[in-house]
Every structure is written in structure tokens, then in C-alpha cells.
Length: 415
Image 1 (cartoon, helix red, strand yellow):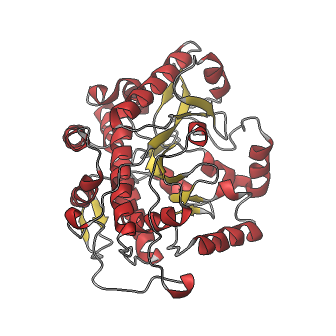
Image 2 (image 1 turned 90 degrees about the horizontal axis):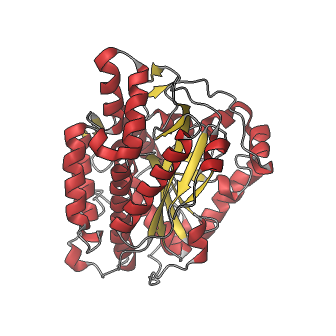
């Protein structure tokens, strides 16, 4: 998201939250309460920060529907657009990064335009691009690398673990220039990561079989030693100690390989939320981004008020993440606030309620409600993929669905 580096975020600086003495683990307090426990009227007002989205896509052969290492050909044919179109670590993937956006309609325009541009470029080469977290068909093991010394270094350092990179996610950047504040916001977001993963789950198939998980991408990605939900970090100094430890042990090649589901960007004044599978449709990508920014905006207000983040253990969070990866939106979720199994949609209702006070004034609340109703009517991305397969037992039908909805959105999701 290079545009972020060219524009400073117009985000007011907020005071750093109160941290535990010594910057260690947060002091437990019970009961654990959700993010928006206090009335929004009690919180200081914070304007919605700027945001943007990065989306990764697989390139597939238009006839066989198998993943193919022809990403360079697609990028070479793509016309200029408002988003940055670029290579990913392997030649099976392409990426689109939006510019800095202020509003949901602005972001929606850029996301839809980038998808349309990539689709048209792929069609010129008898190819297609598909928004799915894992390759449904095709052998993507030992995927050929894109050009670049860093990509070669990653492959040499991590061996077969490089295959964990052959997945496609959706990353939301939210403008927060103050790193201390951004870390405090990340702590507030940790309990919501499983629900955000369930909402975006869109990778049940990989290499010709059903994995038994709604988000197999997240399972593959978690194999990397620097991936997964972030630890609770009480200060920038504590963050630096954690990164230095990963560098010293060789768990990361450089700071850009800190792959936590929420991380401080190393080259942009943003907090990056990386937990989601790439959305099946542009509308779902915008829904995800708007909800993320809403949660961040509420968390910024709570940080300014000195409210501590819920003290959720790493163990509980990892269990909740696995359950979200397996069940997605149609199953059950581990409620990190009560440790009970509850319907995933109930957790999503709680997340939406928590995010609502932070949604923008330009009808974002109505947009979220409308998109959720539509999503519930057609099912999540993972559900739709499985439904397409169930009709005739053909994985090519899944790819046909993915091709249609990647470009045409939710209108094509239930055809």
C-alpha cells in the first residue's frame, strides 16, 4: 500500500493508555468484558481514521480452472488503475492494494475497479483471477517464485515452509501514526480476531479436496513461526523485544516477516489487520474493512479514556482461532469472553454491536446491515464454495462460481 507512505494520516494523536508496571502481562480483572461495554456516550469522540485494503488473488487457467504460474502475464496486461497491482511471493498470485480512502463508497470503487481490471487482463491471456484463500485445483507445492532477492532468501531460509505463502488473504490498513497507541488498539482487537476470521472464511478446498475447515488458509499460514494472533504487548519497547527475539532466533528474515494477525506496519503509519481470507466478493471485502475500522475507532476512544484491553490469554485466543477456522460463520464459535461455545453468528452480532459506534457518518451503519442481510441469505464464502460443489460433485463448478463472483460480486454469488 505505497499510497499510505505518500500521505500522512489526518488522525489526531491520542494519549497512550495506562500500561501495567514494567510493561509485562496485563493485570487480570474479572469478568472479562467485550470491547464496547461502556456506553458510547461515555467515550471521547474520535474521528474515523483513513483506511485501505490489500487483496491477493490466484491466477487460474480459464479452461482447466487449475492454478497456474502466470501472474506476470496478468500484471503485464493490466491497465493502470487507482489501485496498485503487483506481484506476490509466487507466480500463482497477484495483489491489488487500494489507495488511502476516507469513506466506504470510495473504498468500494477502488476494490471493484481493481478486480475488474485484473479480470480483464487475465481474460486477454485465456486466464482468470479468483478470490479464494487456497487454490481449489492445481499443484501449488514448491510454487515458482516471483522475481526478487528477498523472495529467494525466504525460500532458502524456510524450505518447505515457503508453501505456507501460497495462500490469499485480505489485509486492512487503518491509519494510526502513534505506534504506542496502535499497540494498545491491537490489544483491544485481539478478542475479535476469531469472529473476523469466521466472517471472512473462504478457503474450504485445497488441491482437489475438502479440508474440513472453512478457512484452511489460516491453518496453513499459522505454520509460520511469526504468524497467528499477536501476543498482548504493553509497550513499544516490549514489541521491539519480541521482534528482536524473532530476528535473533531466525524465525523471521526481516521485520516485514512479522506476520501477526494484527501488526504495526513497518513502512506505513498504520495498524494492519491481516486475519481475513481474501473475500469472495468486493462487497464482502468492504464489509470486512468497514467493520475493522469501526472496531479500531471505538478502541481508539477507549485507549484515550484509559480503558484496559480484556486480558485474554494466548491459549484461549488460539483455541478460538482454530474453532473459527474450522466452523466459519455457519458453525459455532468459542466466545473468548465466557469460554462458551455459541453460534458464530451470535458472536458476529456482538462484534457489529461493538463496532457500530465507530462507523462513519456516511451511512456505514446502514451499509453494514444491508450487506449482512445479503450475506446471510447466500451464505459465507466457504459455504458458497461447498454448496457449488454439492450440486454436482464437481470442483470445476466451484471455480466457475469463484470466477463469477470475484468480478460481479454478491449478485453472482447465488447463481
